[in-house]
Amino acid sequence: MPLSQRDIERRLGLRVSKSGDTMTGFLTLHADPTADLHAVTKQYVDDEIAGVGGGGYDPLADDKHLYLMQHSGLSTNGTTVTGGPSADTGTATLLHDSTGAYLNYATTTSAGAVAGWTPITGSFSMQLLPDGVFVMKTGANASDLTGVRIWVGFDDGGNENGPTPANSVLFRFDTQDAGDTNWMTISEDGSSNTELNNSGVAVAANTRYVLRVQIVSTTEARFYINGALVATHTSRFPAASTTLSPRLYILNGTAGTARNIRCRMIKIYSL
Image 1: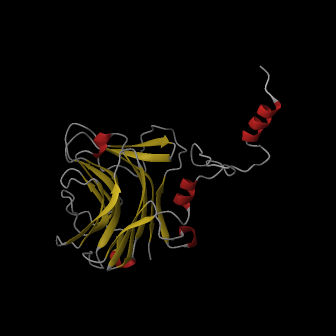
Image 2: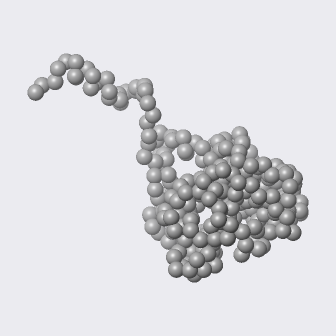
Image 3: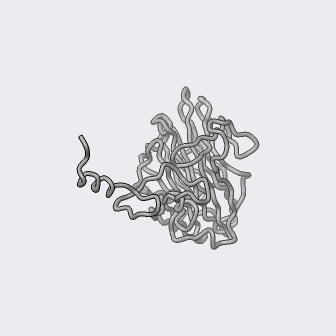
């Protein structure tokens, strides 16, 4: 049956013109841009300019930042990574999905095994006011959040066998010892004196988070999740001269199953 003139006009009105048009609803793109003339997603902008981590900070206007790590997605999906950031234990594998390219860090199946990204201990002191943005994604399976401890932020590498690390300013998710369901924020002064707050943001499997730990002064730190301020700490900090390292890792608390965590980008800004 041939279309009526009205049907033809209606269908033409629903199309998007190649020469330019105006959308009346949202247009969802399949991934971040990979070429200069590709359309840019909000997610990409949030990662790359002022919105990354929240708080109105514009990294492109700051010449003091230390760029630590980013995965552009140019390598083959599933490739085991060598010669770059490596897991403490387990393996680091490059993975791509609709939200970008990540290093997937996998622990071994042994209890106590750790995997993730951490540089040489002692990268920054509190008095340098490090400000860290961590773009990460939880593991794809529910088991990646069961019987685990995830830390994202700054610490001195001490007391990593407990839910509260010594000399630290970081996010925690601990189902091994603490029974966390949300991201928790921690500052700890090295003498078992801790400020601990519940961010109110639930941790889910296979979910992307932009976590920011901003040390504003030696007596104040701010915590952001996906651009929103979720906690401000004003006590229980490491001493001003204490050296800290950025850290993103997962501890496997239960033998038998490997645990995974993924990292897309880590940026640190410092005096």
